[in-house]
Length: 138
Image (cartoon, rainbow, N blue to C red):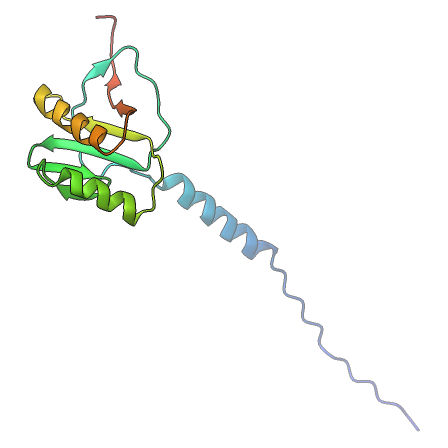
């Protein structure tokens, strides 16, 4: 009796090149991604020589005018600002956030005071104002 031996094909899939390509794509997308915290608005910020970087906040107010104020990404006006701050705080379950307030250089000082008063009524004592770095020594 003769035993017949069948050869089974041995298939081996090497996943190393696939993992390399996926890793390269992940790195590419991480580097090319831009994370904006402001709602896509370009501002002409006032300059300060003593400004400091602030950690990303959970409550950011962007002021363009009395009629156009963004609380994080929610649009409101000065009359509805207090209600919007309460709504965003409850909706996003924010506890004791650091508040960042940025606005156009040309907005009236009185508007900034009204904004600060509104925030203080809601219990926010520490508010960070956003500025751009001052160029030159003047």
